[in-house]
Every structure is written in C-alpha cells, then in structure tokens.
Length: 246
Image (cartoon, rainbow, N blue to C red; front, side):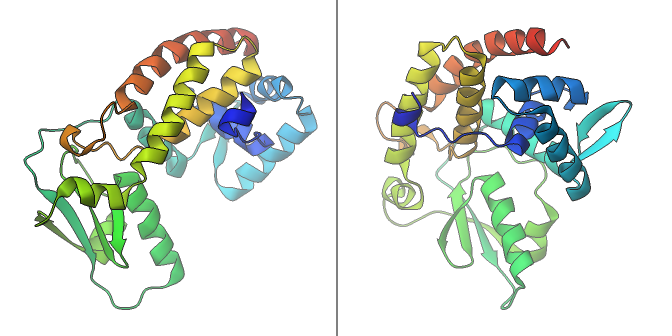
C-alpha cells in the first residue's frame, strides 16, 4: 500500500498532531498520545520529547492534565473538518479575485498570505493575483487577506474550465483520490496502517479545490472519497479510542 500511495512515515510530532487534530475536543493526556506512538514503534521518550518541543513552539498547551491544541492549530482543525463537508452555494459563473495591494512585502507577510489563501482554496494565477470560482460559503476571512489585498468579483472571458485546469492539477488530485479510495476500501486491519491512511486522506481533502461541478472533469472522485472516508473514520476512531483507553 505504501509503495502505491507513497505514504510518508509519521514523525513523533506528526503522530501527536494528527491524533489531536482528529479528536474532538482536541485534548488528550500524555499517556494516550504515548499509546498512539506505540502503534508506530515510537518510544515513549520520543513522544514526550515531541510534546515538550510542541509546547515550547506554541503548538500545544497543558491544561487539566491534558495536552491541547492552541488557537492557531484549532483553526487548522476547523479547516480539516470543513474539508470533510465543504459548505458550498449555487455557482452563477462569478469568481472571487484577490489582488495584492502593497508593492513590497516582507517574507513573513507573503508567507502568511499564502497560507491564508491555501486555507480559502484560492489559487495564484500570477504573482499577487489569487482567484477561484465563487461557490464557497464565506463567513470570515483571515485578517491578513484584508490587510494585503483588494477583493473583487469577476468572470473570465474565456473558458472557465480551461482556466480551472491551469490553476489546479485536477488530474493529479483525482488520481491520488482514487488510490486513497482504494486504500480505504481495503480496510487495513493494522491500526497503524489505518492511522496513516486516515491522515493521508485528510491532507488530500484539504487540497481539494472544491470546484463547481461544471468545472470538474468527468467522474470526479471528491464526494465519493468523502463518503467512503466517513464510514472508514467511524470504525477507525472507535478502534483507536478503545486502544488508547479514552
């Protein structure tokens, strides 16, 4: 399975982070996180060292005998949850457009904007010009977007499907989605394998542009992958919680 999907091995930090991101609320005692590490042959000391480093980096905080995700990573959990059931609205052919207003920006500012745009599923047409079909329900945008960009609505003169195909690697996304779907269907019995596949699916769903149907290639596997993952996750989470004794 790993050879086909090229599933990357999970580091101690990835094990802790993936476990907390998949848990609601995202808080677990160290002993539970150590138990998850044992699935991958990761020593208790290695997991505890990762927790200490994540605590120092502001990724987690200790409260009431548990390690909890901090606000920054709570936002990532919210994006991950949303990727499992994206909120869409009818598409009327219009596109969201964000144009960077400032001429010169420091590297941290550019990196913050790029991260925000990825979370909003906008793609970069060229330097400083981000866009996507306006089919997603928007509530609030990260402040960095308003600080650096002018927001517009418009529509391309040419074929919007061709534009979408240049902005996103739809063929590549669909190919990996089908491979992940097959992995979910295999229902690996090993908890570590299930954990690794689950983390890979969630990462992949975060990269789904969630385009309106008229812009998608035929037989798009996005919704099918989500439905199969939900069934897989219910079974997997039940097994995992019994294993860690929570």
